[in-house]
Image 1 (tube, rainbow, N blue to C red):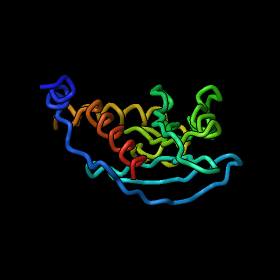
Image 2: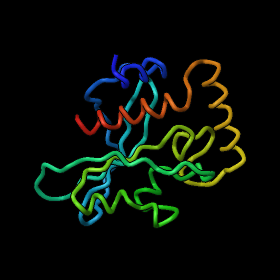
Image 3: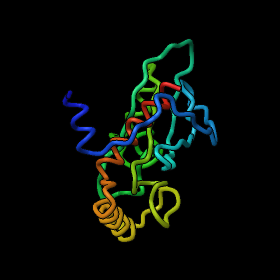
Image 4: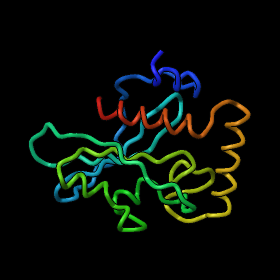
Length: 162
């Protein structure tokens, strides 16, 4: 058994389609690229993301951009796409300007995937508590945050293949 197969077995990763379709909610023209707000499903979980597509003739290389995980759970995909937060974290738009298709999803418990929160407004105490509850729920059900993060990343790559 390969190392990857063994790790998948230990973590309990669920199978994920090679090509996941998505719904486009909106498109914004950003000069050298377009930024689409999309949503897709991974094992029943709704994943909001930005899809940045360079203008011009493809094909283009593609990359999954994950946001940082720190105490500012109100910032996820929006920070790595330069809409909020630390300008040093804005590498999604830089990659799109350099000719890469970029998918930037919200991780579980961040930005649009927070409980009882809307947009990028801070709600640190509640966000922290809800992240802790998600961790506890995962421990009790076998759905660890690491497992969810890995499945979500596989799903994002599958969206890029669609």
